[in-house]
Length: 312
Image (cartoon, rainbow, N blue to C red; front, side, top):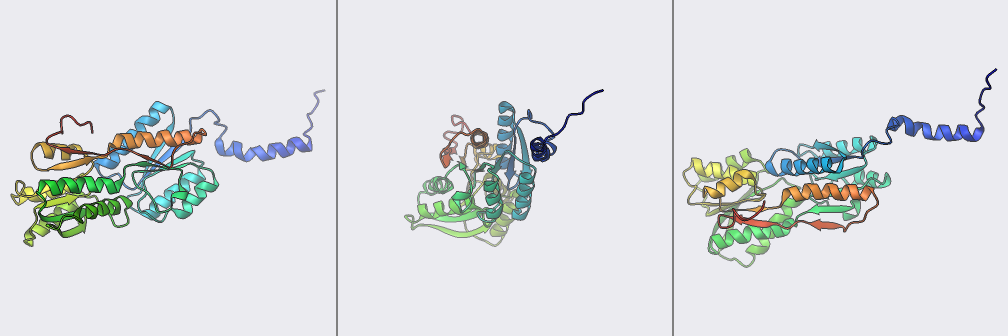
């Protein structure tokens, strides 16, 4: 007659303790770590290039990467991160929709000991994330505006196309513009509006300015999508050759526009490096590696003079 094994009280306590973990993980101990890239939106060259570089790096590392689109909605991004934390994500890469709003959910990530890496945009409280990977948006704004000032020979009227209200990168770039213009009394910003990184909105805004008779010698756009929208409006009005356009991101469309003398300059943020480096850092943090609080990627001005020699 076969003996029936007896479960001791200690063994019973142990089994009850590990059962929830076994159910939650499905006993998939050998599965690759799962990370998430939470983007503010996926509607232009920059954000899609950043996501693509992170995906490519995930394949090289042999890890899983989920990419989510918040559609420029802070509440949507919060909900996405909450769900990821409930599902047991290994690490978070976040491009915040806005500078504020993520405080509570990032505190939850801290309690759960889930590494958080911000990419390309920051939030107000640096204690709520482990590392920032991106560019210095203030310096990028300075670089773009300096190019504009020099192209105009230090005098003229500017209009500015801004990113979304609440965007840290937009605010920092604008502060960089103003820092350059402090010493330029003959350069004036005569109009500015938020085009929300969007090509169609930028085209409509510039078209309305032109129809209203707004004088402008240059258009400074905070990303290339808005710069291309401006180029379209100028082309429709037959003014491409008389008003200079400046952008940021070194998108394929912007580079083509520079070659066709429809844009004067763009600023490369070396987007692919940002995406791949951010995943490297997040993966390293889960493995106990240490990193500086901030990893900055250099920015490069691209004009017709160097367009064929600069790597984007």
